[in-house]
Image 1 (cartoon, helix red, strand yellow):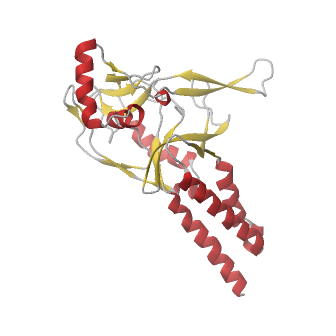
Image 2 (cartoon, rainbow, N blue to C red):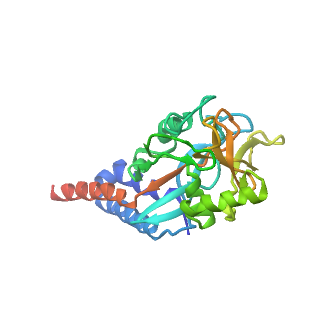
Image 3 (cartoon, helix red, strand yellow):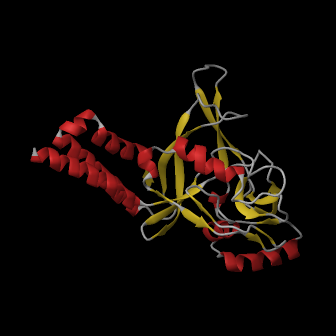
Length: 288
């Protein structure tokens, strides 16, 4: 299943515009669309995709705020108690994890950026009402004993190494490290393979055609993407490489050429607020 962002935007705008405020039939149509969208969210399953939020595509160097705005496509990684764990299908940009030197997930630039500017720029107020925070526990690199010390509560976050194994390789974080140690010992490599093809990410690049400057061409470049788990030192974080393997030694946090694939939890029940508001408004008007 592929769920479009347009369906949600249409329903919300219909309920809020002038006609929706004064025309009961029109407003009821908005309520119907919201309920249909909510049912569609609840029917999504692992592996399905949906559009939610939008962002500005990047050119080959830096983000262009006046260029191409595109819906963000998410993959459903998990479904628990009717909540959906989503991961962006592509790397949405490339950014440094944090300042050069020791850097925890809590103190990282990436965490502040995702839960600050990105949260405001990528999602409308109505969309943020459907999002739920996640408690991210401290992550530890079992190969080097490097560990974060504090938990965080985040709207947007990076997957941990254990979550990458769980959702892309069918292995839980507990057994994962045992097999990784064995693999590293036998293969003499710092890369651990992930079998799921969705682990290989690309970053979309928006480029103007040389033939027609008004035409925008979208290309896709394979790119490593950050995990929030520490590497072999406090100055490194693990990354999923362009071939789908995990570099458990990690890359320096100051590297600004690593992709960002944010994850989040979505709660379809958050739509009840809008549905009830629209219905209450309609009942008041009918009462008059």
